[in-house]
Image (cartoon, rainbow, N blue to C red; front, side):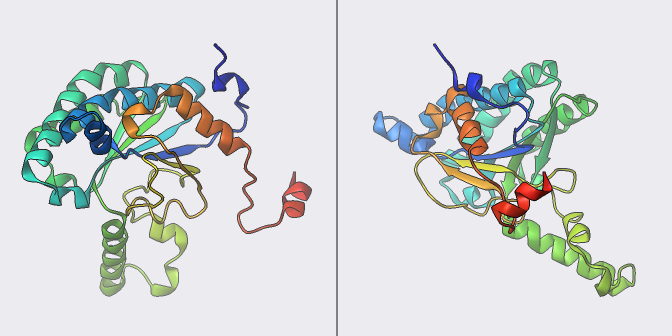
Length: 250
């Protein structure tokens, strides 16, 4: 069967794709199951997204894995999510390593359970020299908190005299974000039919293409990913300019 992958222009790929993996609970509810059933069945979709991204050579993939707001969910669900995260890290560690992917984590990692934190640190150390792509997990992450932390850090430098206010540029600000090592997001995908950003990479998606899919995350697969990339390639990214300007710059 023909794949959307066959239609892709591999010379016009996004450099950084970010995904809001939404709809696990509703997917489970449709099937008369508990919300945790949806989270467990979402692992295949995660694997498909990682593999598809790696397959066509997109160097950065960020997955919104657990938001800072998710801590307010019922304690039983949070506990199940942390246990599932731990299990998944153990299962996927070899896959990530053998694909040559480097693992990164952004967010308030200190809030995570010790076991999960230790596993993440081990995997990051294990893959620190990998050069075949970057897998970024947003865990205990909230973009407003990230931006506020950057402002506070810069303010302290100005207060101490290490930085002048006139020296605060976009580049300086970005060096104080969790994502300082990564390029801006080119394509943001959200599943579940919801059309909102949910406090995710607010600064980094300033010029990203946004795609909102009317499927729940456990139903996301390689073909859905490739279709998103194909749709991305049909867009003209103007960055505030007009089409004629872009044409003259080619």
